[in-house]
Image (cartoon, rainbow, N blue to C red):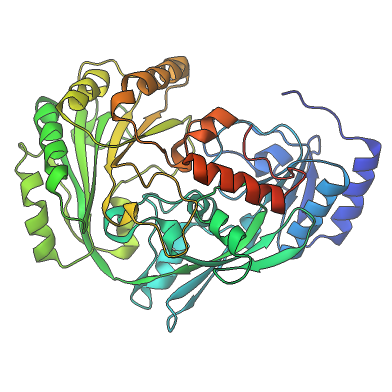
Length: 463
């Protein structure tokens, strides 16, 4: 996609818009002396992706979002949303990007156990605010990620088997629609929009607020077990067998990490290919240790980081990096895994494989994740028993990553689930890519809802 200079009419409209905003508006070629450029202000978390939109509106209020959407409608421009940049899957080089960083904020109602969350809020802020009241959100593995974008895609986190998807906890939302109107939606008001927002990912409007149900929880028995290179195969095979009878109140994943010999990697792990089993149990430490015992016995453990932690430390389970990096991500849903799958997985990503990925992870799903909420939701991936995700950070090997992910789609077909969660799709998104995220019935219903609420396609979901 090529960029072009804004028209004189648009320049005049942007100038007029700036006078009405609480926040700021930036054009592609602006050189603000006291802040970032338009592109810098909406930089993606992956440095492989460089946005260059025509107009950026850094909103400080919902009224600013309304003005931005109305500007786009008047000039037939697409609108995209940026909070933290984690969900970016391709470069944005046109239209209007609404930055919601200025709409961050959390209000906790301990009586109803609901968190009212602003569009620019990161998970850690919600976790910290809820913990004061002995409550916790059902969050993702990284608490540095934005709440809204993650939740709209469904949300598969460390407690997915015991507590379900994050979107299952959405109780309401406030949305700026394509014509600039603002609606409140929940199970009783605008129910089709509410259904679509719970897992439909986007293409519906700009969500300025989410209301999330919290759970009574102050601590977890959680963390990780790491097995050294000689024990990767035995531990991974043992974990895969263990999942067949794993209790629903335990959520785990197993990730093969090909760690570089660099200073940011902890000393015991530098330059090694290891297996890390991540574990979370929302109960007391004694019961958690009993549930973890079979995993501790899989093979000699290199590092044991399992124990009781406060909910405010939930990010330590996966220990996802927070700094921007040249990351490339892909995923696939699997119905099940068996010995034949394990053979191929180890051959592709285990020690000695020359995998282009730093991490190849299998998350165990099922349990509460497989059960839809009352009234239904658009969340994809419930038919999967496992979610496979791949992460690479070496820019010269991106072509190898793309080729490997394409090959994965072919060789994993015998185990493939009918759906892969939208948050784990590699970009750029096309109609064919998006068809993998939902069932045909859900995809059809989502298209109908999007056509109703965004008939002009103001909020494109794909590239």
